[in-house]
Image (cartoon, rainbow, N blue to C red):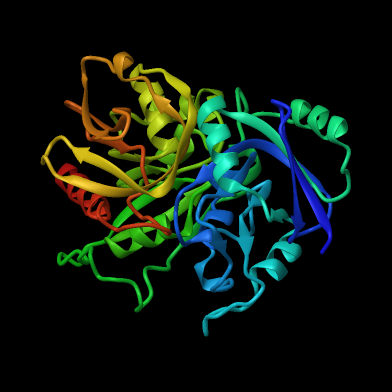
Length: 374
């Protein structure tokens, strides 16, 4: 089997097997603790600029099913595994993972001690890396890792957002658990969704809960959104440093108080910045499908799907903003709402894909908030 290498900016170099596209690619190294859902992870635009380690030791055993894609393509810069199965044991599979990675031109490596690599990230924090199938020279690889761009101060939404507005009409398919009831009122609400790297299941969730969704690019001005005469605005997930997404920050600042707003992940961070809070890069972020979050408003604990490398600094939340959710692992901010305006957001992913559906009810909470304003 053809060899491949991963090198970190701290000097660590590991050799494994090339199991994806040939070439080399790199960025911020993160680890994901989900045991399944690798296809949804690879197609999540929030992973642009990042190399993903899967901590679960066997990846690829159920192949890839096109209908599970969270966007039109793969976004992870590279993919790192302990062992990848070349056999797809699933009747839904349309390709093996290795064939899909090659088709998507994603460099991938297996045969790596992912436990050691994960511990390195946990200890050393956010590290840049490079994965290569063409360069086995240790010194050269480490130098390349040190020159890889990190996500700091980069507006990566530019590369993942749609180029022009479009209407999204698909809801859940019949196989999706009906945990969130469809609105019984029958009256649909108009929602403009900012695409900072929106996952398909977020848009499906909005449609399922009674919204007619128009998706707009990341740079859309507030005046253009207000001209659409929508009932509400949604701010999606996305990659990169939230403080660098200045066009969106300016637009959202002009929309607050004029439309009900719900933000998820990057959308939550952008909304928090508009409210007056600050964000910071985390040591190694939250990436996985098993993070416990307490809903302070209900007292319930929900197991959540998460994917973010930045967080809102809790001590910077202004007085007119209420903390609504907190991470039980490290006490970081997981949700907030304005005390007077119809505005709220969460850091985690209530639409999951992959992950648990404990928090999917938040889409109905958004609908009820919007309906109350009409």
